[in-house]
Length: 478
Image 1 (spheres, rainbow, N blue to C red):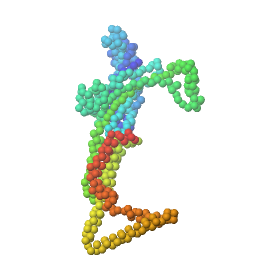
Image 2: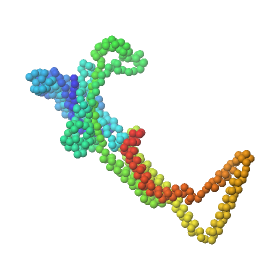
Image 3: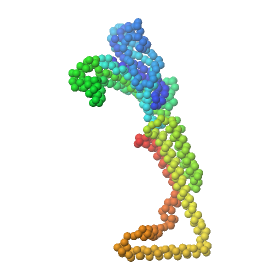
Image 4: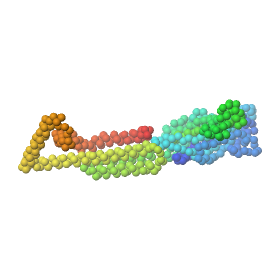
């Protein structure tokens, strides 16, 4: 028997991961049954409630199981309806209805198990799946679902705001990925977090032999009676046929249809409350570049305050999101913003240190200019020059003596001689700090560090933080 399901999703009530999701839907099962005769034309009865006065209530009906359901309730039972087909001749009331048919209708609310992946938060999409299954039966009594294409057995009747902004009856919903004929507007309240973007159905037929499908250990094959019987069945095809005949055809047929609801998060809540506010805090940290480098206390105070504020967002995310093995996009965004603000604090320390070194150098130059024209300064300069000449002369003598010695006569140098050689060589190549690259780097850092950081480094770091976190680069990499 082929059963044709038609499910209309009427309301997405709740999504509560990792516990369950709750939906309300309307179900219509239809099937052909040639045993329905003229006395049952247009018969209606309560489902699963046999009427002792009417044989029409005894016809076969599909028994539906919900293996994924945590809880299910039939909100409205519309019962069983039968119609006689043309095969009964003039007794049929529907011209063109070839075979007699029956259909059952009811409205149900159910909770199903759900597991959601939060790695793409707040731009996440999920599939909520639930299964309708007919109890396993042998081949003699098997029945199965027939759904056609994925969108042929499903429809949605939801509020227009939940199917996409600007949608109205007769138009295609903006966020809807399914077929236009599937959707129609409803006056029921919409879900505040999720938009329904697709609704599909897939049927599956499974045949399993409970005897041959067993897999176990060698010990069980040698001691378990059922496993011994399995070995005999596999060894002798005639024994297998005999076993199946005695078991009344033990190959069981399981038929099920899986419905998949695709939902998309309405992410403006997270964008405005998390992403925009964190960007505001990071941009406030950018203001430290416009403070004087000497104001190290004020600059570090702003940077550390922004770091603490970003950490509050991290604590809120940890408390509101379930524990997962990996970080979501929003959590990566928060972590990278913390790193950016930390680098701003480090830059403030480096630039302030260079500015202080430059200020000390300028202060020294001012003192030198102040005392350069004094008589005692000229005498001090002459003393320094004589000391320098003596030092240079000693250096030349030491080099001449070292070059005049035969390498074989010198022998290995002692640790004192090696230290003296390093000292003289260092003094020969030593320059004033103002003339070396290190002093040039200190000057450039003090004068251009804030400008380069504010116009180049900070925008690049912020752009990298936005791109690699919110686009999912880090979530896919790890």
